[in-house]
Amino acid sequence: MLNHAVFLTQDTKIGESTARPGRTCYTARQKMSRMSLPTIQKIRVRAVRVPMAEPHRTASGMIGESPLVLTDVVTDSGIEGHSMIFTYTPAALAPTAELIRNIVPLVQGDPLAPTAVAEKLNQRFRLLGTQGLVGMALAAIDMALWDALAREHGLPLVRLLGGAEHPVKPYGAIGYDGVDDCARRAELWAQQGFTGIKDKIGYPTVAEDVAVVRAMRTAAGDDMAIMVDYNQCLTSAEAVVRLQILDQEGLTWVEEPTLAHDYAGHAAIAQAADTPIQCGENWWGTLDMRHAIEAGASDLLMPDVMKIGGVTGWLRAAALAQVNAIPVSSHLWPELSARLLCCTPTAHWLEYSDWWNPILRTPLQVSDGLALVDNTVGSGLEWDEEAIQRFAA
Ligand SMILES: [Mg+2]
Image 1 (cartoon, rainbow, N blue to C red):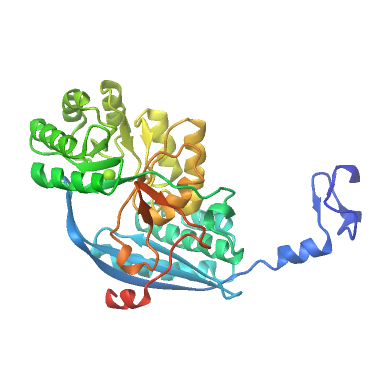
Image 2 (cartoon, protein in one colour):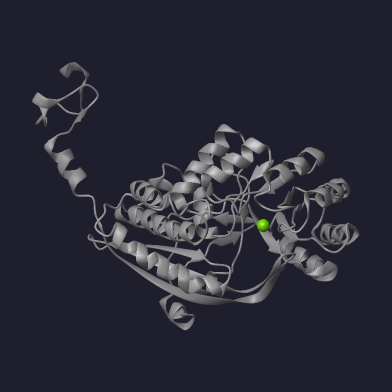
């Protein structure tokens, strides 16, 4: 039934005699274009340990440096795509870098087609699972492939994804630093024009949590959106009690009050509290997000571009959030996340962080309280090679 075939042009039909219903027939030029997709020639993997200007304290531990794995995909057309992933602990740095190197032979020679590569690798690791280090390694490759694809087309990533660059609303981060330091930092963010701040709490008593929140409010002003983050340190029963008190403080959200994968616990907290619950940075892939949404675990969503599955995973998470009408904020990776929020229908807040600025030539710029997404080609990562050598692990 030739009449069901789709002919894109009238000239040089390929396979006209064999066309079957639903098949697309291409011109010779289109076929050549399809055949000339660049391929993955090699992947370079490097590990660095980037010290933080000041240690970042949370209720679940302190971070004094960023162990990062940098991945560079090189195509046969000479294009390079970059990504970085954060292993949280130096103990995971070398194993994660080695894991990425071990995955390289699985994709070498494959077309520069990030979603196809993601499907292939997800299938390849189905029996082991794609959480933890495997998920991080796959995200490293995915993010580098998307960067390379954007550069191959000479486009900013936002435009490759069909979006348009625009400023996004960032919030500044404050650690588990006590009343005086938290107030001082809140004031500094306000002076820089930020309209949101997020503080780590989870002090021994809720009275101390409240004292820190009120000190920040006084320092930063009534218009400042204040979020707080428990970093999973409470039981769900403890969280219900604390949130009844915190509900009086006008908080924009309370983040991860209990264990990230305790969806039933988070749902109970969300039911009991008026303040919105924010979760997502520890969900592995969009299936975790689906389960959390189905459980009613979180009023807001905060995927982490690495743990959610790279750019490919983020796009699917953004679609899931859209159909469920839930606002999406980002977690770390400010350069890439700002670009992805430009392509996220329910975009909410960008988590701003300067932790990784020392190895970047063009860190994300913030002006008058807005993060500026520029139109540079790719996903916004350009290495400072001298700094990378200095911090090499
Ligand atoms: Mg958090």
